[in-house]
Image 1 (cartoon, rainbow, N blue to C red):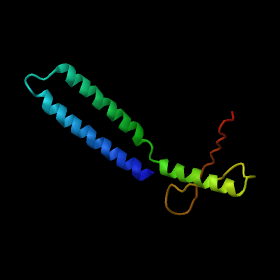
Image 2: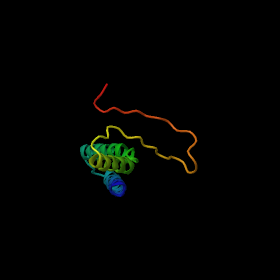
Image 3: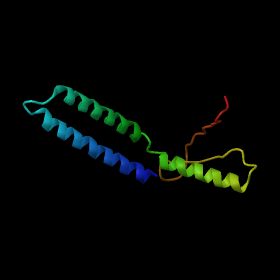
Length: 107
């Protein structure tokens, strides 16, 4: 899934670069339509915003893997009602960790 996201981000970057280059060339023309330039510029800005929103999903592969493993464990043992997950963020032994309790749907 992360590969697909990375590929999509790369394609989006290519599209943004292509549109930007095309718009730059068009805007330099003597009779360039300013409304069109503004419209295309807005489109490019929107695409950049989408790219920035997607770029924050760098843990999507990890979260997807965790969800799949939880489903498999719960299918094997329906009495499971919580999971303790240790995610190593740095190489070497785990010396300092945190505990994050998440209760979906509960306040």
